[in-house]
Image (tube, rainbow, N blue to C red; front, side, top):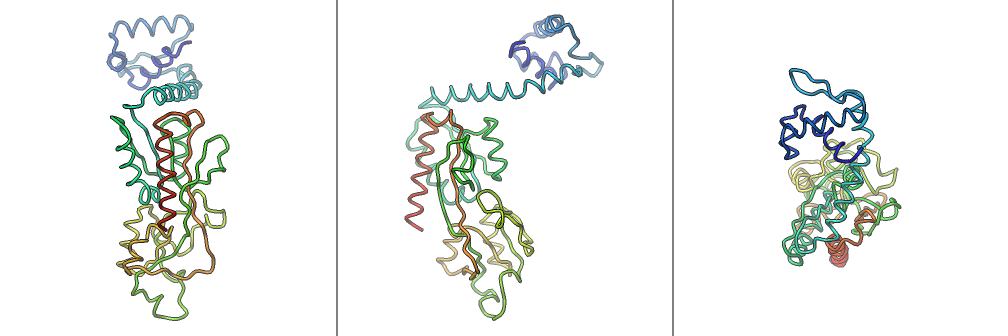
Length: 291
């Protein structure tokens, strides 16, 4: 079988119609019909049941699609890598980030990327660490930056980024700062669910967590307007702490949050990806000097 045969089967399966498949493949309806007939003859099998409602894939067609999925993923990666190696002034880079990187690094990095490239487009996705890793692995993203440790994924190229101390904060007028004997665990916690680079001990969800969200601006507003305490890297609360709106709550132990940029080895030398990695690393160094 050829890759074009798999594409034909998948398109017919997805759309259930020779007419619609012909439109998607930019071919005539008779051409698609002839290709399907020749393929079924060559394989000596029926790939689709014809019914009044359309085409229904047989068990054999479903097997071909399931078995060929990894091959299609690898072909997409190859095509994407060729694009990355040949497109310098135009094209697209696809970046996935965690919510903290989005807030503390991305605005400056995106501005510098646009200033240093031509007609290149950069698209970003913000999501959970596990989702970002899956999207990187299947080729949907070119690189990711989030709550990872650079050396935890040996099959990927890793570059350390921001390291920060996790802190618990509350509004300046919170009872915690006025009443003795009170602890942060006595109040509702608003924070993201633990993920990524934290140790297994720190991955546990606290018993007092009542609000789970990756939207740090939202969490800050919740902390400012209620008795909820908020937890996260100190950098995301920097402005509110400097203005005296939030105060840091004393805790028994210090926990370090760290992040990294990860990419597949075949993407490491692509000029646009290499540029974006450099900007992320430089941005993280500048952040470290400011904090």
